[in-house]
Structures are given as C-alpha cells and as structure tokens.
Amino acid sequence: MLNIVLFGPPGAGKGTQSKKLVEEFKLIHLSTGDLLRSEIQAGTELGMEAKKLMDAGKLVPDAVVIGMIRQKLQDNKQAEGFIFDGFPRTQKQAEALDELLENEGTSITMMLALEVEEEELVKRLLERGKESGRADDQNEEVVRERLVEYENKTAVLRNYYQQQDKFQGVNGQGSIEEVYQRLSASIAAAKQD
Ligand code: AMP
Image (cartoon, rainbow, N blue to C red; front, side, top):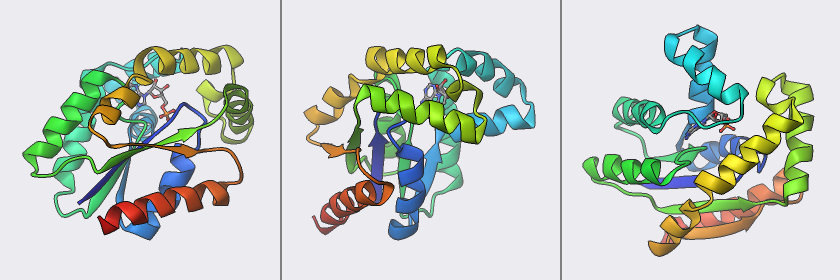
C-alpha cells in the first residue's frame, strides 16, 4: 500500500493537492477537516462540539479525530492506499495512526511536507475565506491562532517522521501545478522503491 501523510501548516495547499494526487495514484483522500465539516453540516452533536473549537482556531480532541480515521480505515479495507490530509496533527495522533495501520498489516510510506512562508499562508487563508465562506478562514485572529496551534502541537511531527526516515520537505510556493509536479515526482519515486 501507498500511505502518504500530506503535511504542512493551514493554507499550505494540502486539500487542493490531495484532490489532484488521489486521481493520479488511485488513493483514498482522508481529511479530518472535511470529515469534521460534514459532521457540522449534518448537525450532529460531535459536529457542534467540534465547531466551537474550530471557530476558535483550536484543535479538536485527539480521541475524536482518531475515532474518525479508525472508522474510515475499516470502511476502506480494499484501498490501494491513503492520503492523510490534516491528520495526524499531534504526536498522539501519529502514534495512533501507526498502530491502526499496523493492525492492517501496513504502515506510512512517507510524509510529504509542504513548506510555505508564514505571511503567504495568512494571505492565502484570508483569500480562501472570501471565496469559500469557511468561518475559520475569515478572521485574521483565528487564522493566526491556527498557525500557533500548528507550531505548538503539530510541527513536532516533522521529527517523528524524520526519525523513521520518512520525512520529505517539498517547496509549497509557486503555482498549484508546479507544486503538484513536485509532489507527484516524489510519490512516483517512492512507488519505485
Ligand atoms: P483543516 O481543514 O485541516 O484546516 O481543519 C480545520 C479545523 O478542523 C482545524 O483548525 C481543527 O480545529 C480541526 N481539525 C482538523 N483536523 C484535525 C486533527 N487532525 N486534529 C485536531 N483538530 C483537527
């Protein structure tokens, strides 16, 4: 199986690139942000609880997102592989993911980390807020809080995957197509190994 963690701060382009990559490599796209937004739209209790945290730019509890990913892995046993987008975001989530994959007899192939300068991220997120109407993208304070959460809780995962020799940084600046070519080349190379 080909299991990719597409990593990077909010606004790095993980969602956009995932959608393109899954078509080329026949993978399943699992975005915890998208899954949480579906819960909000469906008006579930879980969604309502998560919304409060999401609107404040905070992470939702590990147990919530780990449970969602566990369910999706169970639902997709025939998959050729997955792209994890926005998950894991904490060390605990990364450990849980390793365990879940191990139970399926597989593992993470690599982490591809999109690298983008902070001011470019803020600009992209506020721009997206105007187009998509996503509440957490419309307020600069919330946008900056998400970047702080990323630095405090998520950035450490770089070390987690580096220690396993699975980390690969990718320049996330430039056009969507340019970034896509870089990611696609890295994945194609990993497939050959
Ligand atoms: P995203 O669409 O990935 O930017 O996620 C939007 C929001 O959903 C984040 O700011 C968090 O509040 C929440 N969220 C998404 N994925 C996770 C995760 N893996 N762990 C905790 N919170 C998450």
